[in-house]
Image 1 (cartoon, rainbow, N blue to C red):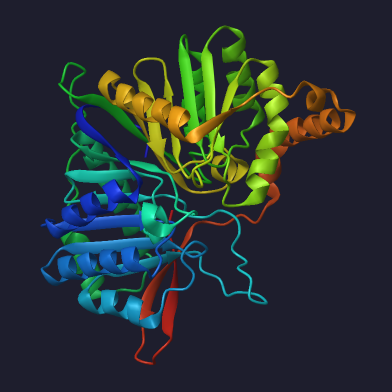
Image 2 (cartoon, rainbow, N blue to C red):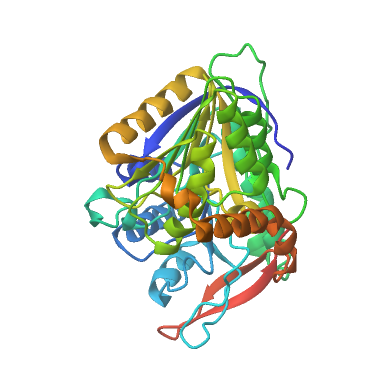
Length: 417
């Protein structure tokens, strides 16, 4: 689906699970026709169980409920957890599940990394927050810092239509099934009315990344905004290992006088993330880019703003997996009020919970560091082409069909575009 600019949208920033989960659960509780949901991670913890309860209740009152989870991100859902949803009428698909090999997951590449919810074709949620207790502050030191948006208006219809198309494509590959055909026939597909530029509310468009015709759409939105920046660029991104073009655009913007700030992980959930980003610090500092490390807990956000009225919130990291392999979804927002809200949040984060990393002149001149940086730049420059050598496949969805034997459920393979 090509991005369509829509106008007259209401967009509300949600920070962490404390704000996100109650809004999603309330929307599902009020659903009247459909709930469509995609998530990378669905854990069988207090958040996952609460979501399951709302989905089951919605399905039992006649709402069309379809859920897709990633086979790598959500590998250990129990028979009872799945069976309760399916028995209530929830259609549960799993993206590219594979059996573990020697206790290790093998479906490492081309993950379904989107986090989307669409309710009744009127309300939608887009962001980076998974359905896991890790996104709640009381989880402990490893609780995630993250963002999502709640949207109403034409852009919510666009998200709904995307999920309808994605899930319907999977279902139509299944063997003939009267229940499935009736489900699809009754699934509402509202008409998208983009509105006029003069309409009150935010302008926004929905951008996805796949391994077919939209391989670079999200990266291109970043590049266009950064290349046109005149005053400020702030990026908060958990896994920062951008491609050569993005890295060059950030440095070029800083050299022409734009205030470029990066908020990256200082308390990483995976140590390699920080070590890889560290290799870029000297080059970024040489161009005047300011780097802040978020140290209160692991940063999981994927948000950015440029100048007065451009911002993005979504699932896409700025690393090789998100930019070259995974299925991702971001919302691009042109609205001064929303951008000001996001700017205020990120500036407060930098003051209250970050430390600014000062340039390290001696480390920058170390021969080993210079050689490592050179190798890293070449890797970044060529990775998008090299990623084509990794195992490629059409996205595979598998319909979960619990059987009556405890601890086991069948998975029937289906393909989707």
